[in-house]
Length: 174
Image (cartoon, rainbow, N blue to C red):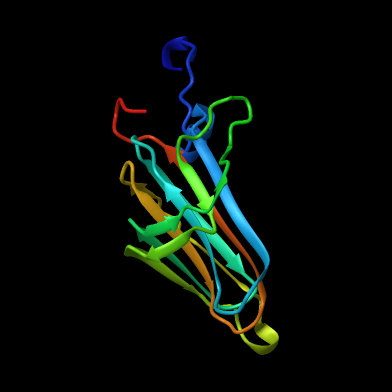
């Protein structure tokens, strides 16, 4: 330091997701099917808490696929509950967001996003993967649906994954 002083405090710069891990409010939930039928779908129903969440998601499938995201779907059964995993293994904080696989959806709701995931053809066939790189800030106390659809007529391995943190980016909020 100029004038012979010493630096006694450090400024640490880290990304928001890493910071949320340290806060103990970053979670993940996923579902897989090693043999998803042709034209079938793998789905996650996400029910946000009163504080809302920020969501990122990704998926992979052994062939051509589509990844769709819907707000306010209608269901007759929520499916099987998944326990979200806290990315900070030094905390006992549990998610208040509810996540389910294999819900029974009667109305998709409003489509917010769709990603077509080409898997290649012939000798270049590699399977497909896709991810949303900017998070969605989801409304509180609302249902959302993630759907990965096998666009082929063949059985394929499939995986659908959601990362989220609970709360808001509003200064002073959690």
